[in-house]
Length: 127
Image (tube, rainbow, N blue to C red; front, side, top):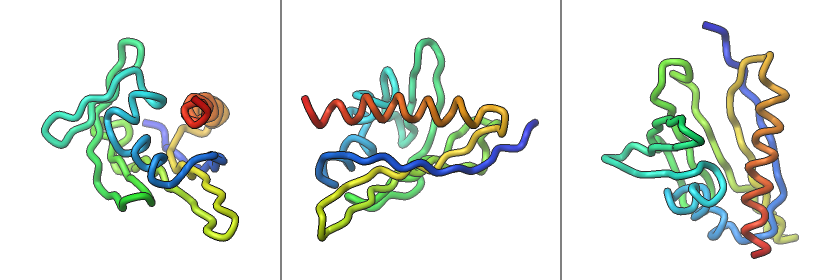
């Protein structure tokens, strides 16, 4: 098995921390931008994309600040997906910081995939 490398990305979001937190922490919110559908069954999130499914547990969260998911498949074992809300109180700017893992050969693809997904998220603020 190849080694996964940790990386972080940051995206500006023209919204409130409360709304952004709802979109990154609830099955309903996540299914609007992150996956085709998200179900929560017995504390396990079922993420579905075009015929594939991944399971994850929400291992840590803090309202309006961050969520951390632990993927339950062997390939991602011991690697967390974190989505953190960065809030600058003086300027009221809000950003979403994502920390994820990918194989070195897939790093560019992973960055582009996150950029595409977050664009879907950002469109929700202008709807």
